[in-house]
Image (tube, rainbow, N blue to C red; front, side, top):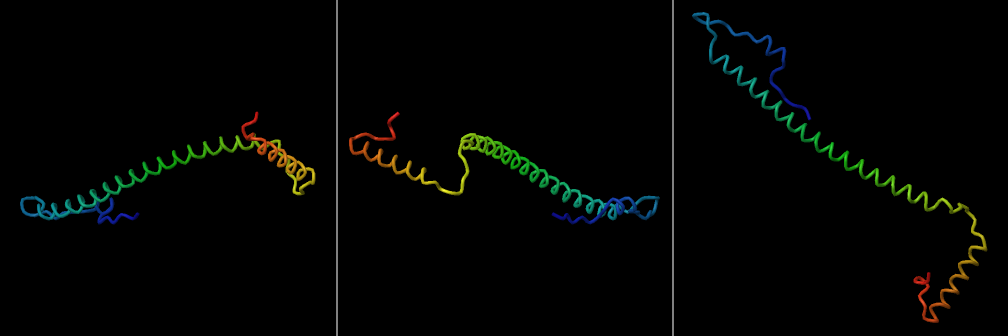
Length: 121
């Protein structure tokens, strides 16, 4: 976000006020300049507050994402450990199909005789 300021450090440093009578500066001219400096200061201060709020918000978001990442890494390790013994093969063998059919037949037999195959240990 760009901040629109009226003055910069060089303009403030090089600002000169003409001397009036009795070697004094014109108070109105000095007041106008100080009003511009004050407006710039208020604008810059508001921008700093907004930036601090954005920074704090981003820090909280980073912490949340780091926690989520850590939890996801733990879950990934659980799944890796769980699936380490599964062999990866693209071709389906008839042995697997025969085993599935046999398990299905045994489960049907158990259901027909009043047993729940999911509760048997």
